[in-house]
Length: 304
Length: 294
Image (cartoon, rainbow over all chains, first blue to last red; front, side, top):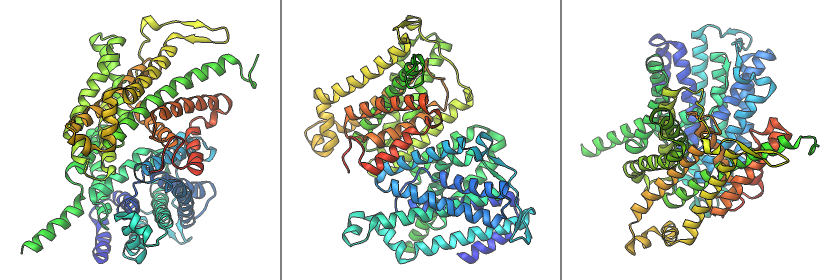
């Protein structure tokens, strides 16, 4: 699977616009990080936009106002999202199920208002014109092709980390919590610690995606922090396939591609279409694209 | 004369606004709690139903000459009827699944409603005239009380009380509470529980639409008015817990007043104060002020 991803990633920029692909990769990483939490621990966070935006703002501020090189900006953005994730996680895991979703949504709205009001976030305008700079002082990222391969490397690293996590003993315990929490507790696992760790990991990788996005588009704005963004990443994950490794990336490609395709044709109907996809997914298509394909191949194999 | 350095007109004016917002928080969190109790679904579309209620009033007046009082009856009925369809055709299929799917479905519905209205009416917002019977106001000596604002508080709290009475003191309410606890047993006793669920959802949605009509003359009628409000209401629900009806009302009104005081004394924090209170409550009493830990 990795080989296919790498080959696909290397060929893609010769077939499609690198800018479009970089957007897909950032959101694919975002959705994969989100899926780690929803798909493998069963926790629905409706506030992941906060980590995405926080990573983007911190990275943007460092690179634009303090002249930091991009790798420092991205690392700092990731680390800040990780800290924010720890705070969110400690609060949100005190409640479960539906309350968890409402708490993360409210906390993310808190971060949104802070980003509107704090002096160094640029208010309604956000941070514009963030310099891409030179990676390690050597590689000029202003070239789109160079930038693309850098983003691809970040995505693959993040994806690999998620893949490793899911297939580790730690990941098995997460799945046990998802399937039957009281049983995991009775087996002696400190469930809250595992949940928190998964939450922080998910927030960290989301921050990485956000910070990378800030460098790619040279922009950190309130759109990143809005609750619509949290909803969008839920949709990507759901559409691609909850709890599948590849699903969120497929979902991100589909949604970003759809938005790109429809943006100049239907204007503000995009929200309606997004909502309709949500409804259809929940009612008819709960396994998502990858999940359905996998189920299909299973039935084929058992039939033959 | 000033109170802690603030002229009383300003202070009481803001407190009245806080009382109004608090009444809306109370009505909406009540509707959420009733729906959650019966259907086990968090109705993300609650904000959209509130927004649609306001728009029904506005469109009714602008296009069909339906006056305010007629809208107050018509909007909840229309939104309620539409919600019957939503429950029958969509939500019903999700009861056997994880609660999260209900949240996601209603989130999608909220996006659709918001998108449709944004497409036709933009995001600038429309204003709705205060009905003539409620124009003007009274001078209370320490402040000027606009009649309409007083009416909103009275009507919203009246509705809250009516819901409390219906659930806690009537036969239908007793059936409803029983069905919340043990739907299988109540069904076995010959009561049509699926119908009860449909009606509960419609009533909750109608309540939101009623609040929307009440809000139309005091707030801008705007496609985003619901989603901005519903997130605050979620925080209110987390703070109060969904265990008790009176708890929801007290929490809603109380938080509206706290928000108003913040607006007077430290305006920078007014947008976030409810979320901050939620954080504190989660640290001190994670089950919520009136909730029981599930």
